Length: 125
Image (cartoon, rainbow, N blue to C red):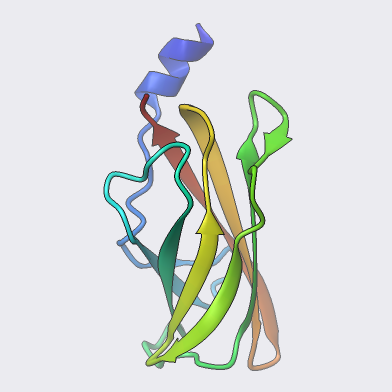
């Protein structure tokens, strides 16, 4: 039954801008590789704006991920390695070691606001 639920759950479109939980930021992600691979360290570019569309260049971002059904985290600790400007941040060290349902949470602090956003990924073998 769990496998059927997992298959029915779609992956979030990482490239589509979405609001953080409290509506303080608008976030999108552009993975370096598409589809997102298994067992390969890769990078993502995070794009960060205010809800009004103004770029945010001085944010602190932490990245956490894991598989809820297996109760384990990511095998790496992804981090922002570079602020690219124009609201873009390079996230290095992204890796997923097995297929299935993953969640990736970004905690963001900037301009006196803190907020988070959660992405769901269904990774295929």
